[in-house]
Length: 466
Image: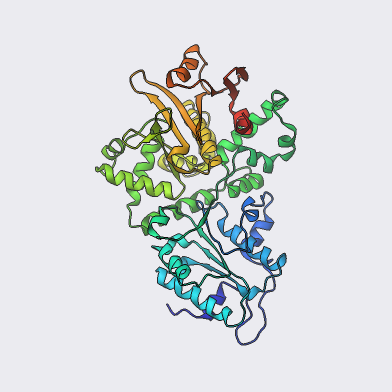
């Protein structure tokens, strides 16, 4: 592919037209991404817009799964530069990597932009690269530019749908990583019923519990993906195309990595069948075409890097995890649960199938545990094995659903949503070495001293303040 300024200008219509000095557009109001964002009935101004400092020599990487708004964030930042900061449009460079193959090509187009602008100005330049995960070994290219002093007085913002151990591959490349997640229940409620969220508090929770349970059912079905919420708001259902587009994109990404899409489906089926239960690589391998446990580990790590699943490791009470014992595997959002559950079960219309299956006891129990996990993982940005683990006594078959590690403090969370809370449940904390903890119940809200019992909606809204 021949790379020149004319090619680059295709994705940067705010630049001066080459040879004329005129601009095709003067703002981003008619950009399809911005236009779609502005036209949606439900939209949330991403917090990350205030967390990215555009006046510094930083390399930001926005990590997040598909359909979480990474491209929208990039375009909103560009719009902010043009409208609020009054930045010279020619000093803003955007490129989506869907038509690039190598990091050498990526380097070349960045250098063409830098050489063009540095011939005219020494003011700060801005580089926005979208879908950079499509480029194999992309950190090597960015690292070269940084070492060559090409990024002086330049702010670089990259968006990636896949997260790996990039720092090791990139050598000395130093980046500021930001994780883009789906909405938690509180953020979901802020969009669908902000008045209810403003009214409810710990003191008056009981007065609003029934209404909160109503919205929890919706959240169980839509999850925290804003396209799903907008589809539900407009049509009372998630459009089948949203499910299909996500699944197609995911399978295409798997295929681009040279992996077997059928094996991926078989692995997802085993995750669904064992959701919330300890599951070993060898167990999955025996029930799929993989046969070798190392292949299973590789596929699970890929799905985890794509923000589809996360593995939770068993640990001792000090939070030291072990990869030798069976992991529990969860989806990062309820929408992803229903996407794969419906696909694996052969449904042709996912929304009505999801509604039909929601309150089937086995499905509902698994979904409740997955929602608790997703909430804990999301609020910790899903960072590392040490953030979230679980405790299990394999001899007595007792388990604490999650251990949440925050510095030197560990908070155990025991899920008892669908069963009666018994005296033995309190003893589990003591047996594991904890004097305090949280029990999530169906309806009980009690303070038992060091042990707090609370309904799920209470936990989802107020757990951080406990």
